[in-house]
Amino acid sequence: MTLDQIETPAALIDRPRMERNIARMQSRMDTLGVAFRPHVKTTKCVEVARAQRDAGARGITVSTLKEAEQFFAAGFSDILYAVGIVASKLPRALALRRAGCDLKLIVDNLEAAQAVAEFGRAYGETFEVWIEIDTDGHRSGVQPDESRLLDIGRMLHGDGEPHGARLGGVMTHAGSSYDLNTPDALAALAEQERAGCVRAAGRLRDAGLPCDVVSVGSTPTALAARHLEGVTEVRAGVYVFFDLVMRNVGVCATDDLALSVLTTVIGHQVDKGWAIVDAGWMAMSRDRGTAKQTHDYGYGQARMLDGAPLDGYMLTGANQEHGILANVDHRGGDVSVHLPVGTRLLILPNHACATGAQFPVYYARSEEGEVVVWGRFYGW
Image 1: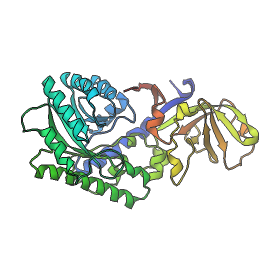
Image 2: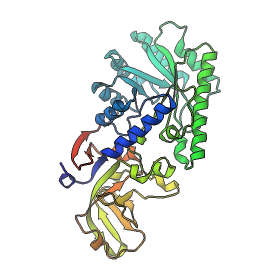
Image 3: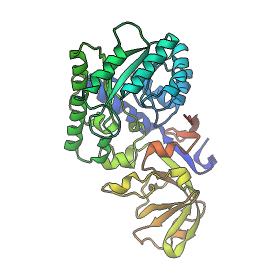
Image 4: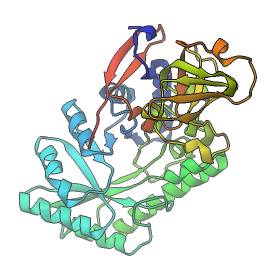
């Protein structure tokens, strides 16, 4: 298959870029002396996860039980479900473990820890559970110095005998790294993330509780960390594709972005300097993550099929199926001449995870221009 045989809009993967991104992150983790557990929620694609595993990744991180089920069926067994578990989802977690999946769960509250322990005891299963640590006030987790950290740990550990759950470790995610854009600030947050998670692990151990795993990670902090003493593994996801948000954060160049949306010019508003394309928010998503950053890319950056930037143009608007590619610099003459109907373009996304989620398949393109189709998971 070639690009001109693909109906638009479509999600394209630049395989050489993707492979370079995978190699870069794995090399970084190898240098820092930690295991790497990629977060596969970005791609939800078996072929991509296999490429990460082939490069040296150990285990995967998922954001839904649907992902866990699909990846387990595809041969991945060491899986961290990195969203706080609730009682209603435990039967699916039990089914995975009984099928042979080494599924780990996370909690950040005593109620969830108790629910896991009681459910596991009732069904004769011992769930491995990690405690989520809040190291940057971003979203979820227990702060490293909170007293309830030990309460949750004791609930999971019990008296040391099998009782439905066991404490496997701690994990954290420095999501606020997405708000930064300098090497020093990223390095400082990476150290804050590392130190907080290691401190939480130390408190558990000092209380006589086991804590084998210390898991940290986000794409920016993984690439910015200067050392990872006390950490056993790192997690990161969007690095495999990168996106315009990551470009603004400063951890990649635009030419590292491996995901784009193939789109076609379907009309014009010449007096406004607009080319209308068939990639609206149903293709690009409504994510406007670059709007609060130093460089706003609208709904995405347009490029020619050969990758050359379409200077002066921005995807400024997105209706359901229509995208407005505006000549924001008001130069270059008649847009209908410059970009006639039928012109095919690439749009680089703000947020690779959100844009990828709009499509059922990826079209993965080799350096020679050959295209193969890779499926993508949906649902929860």
